[in-house]
Amino acid sequence: MFQANETKIRENQRKARETEEKLSELAHMTFSDMLTENCSAVLDARHHILVDRWKGMTKDQLAHIRQQQLFQINERQVYTFPSVYLEFSFYSNIF
Image: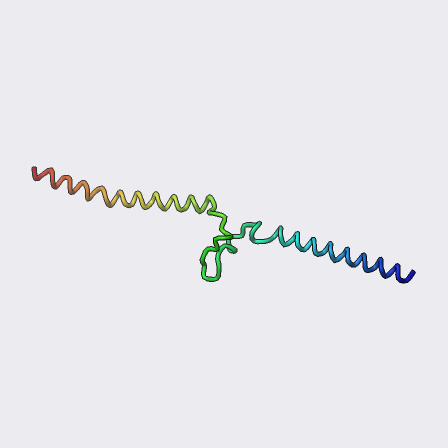
């Protein structure tokens, strides 16, 4: 009878340990950087992107880049077109 109780106790301890291991693994998978897409996990200590963890840019990041591109295009047009106009007017006065 004493041995049967020890066997039950060990079996209960084993089940409790397995349950705790499964819950720990589930918590790790749920809150890991990969599944939560943590942006800080993408960079290493030297601030280089770890390619195997990169999931792409967010819509906000893409919109910011597009906004900067449009600003650069407008800025270039402002500085480029007046000089083209001046060159054209210079040649038109010659003829």
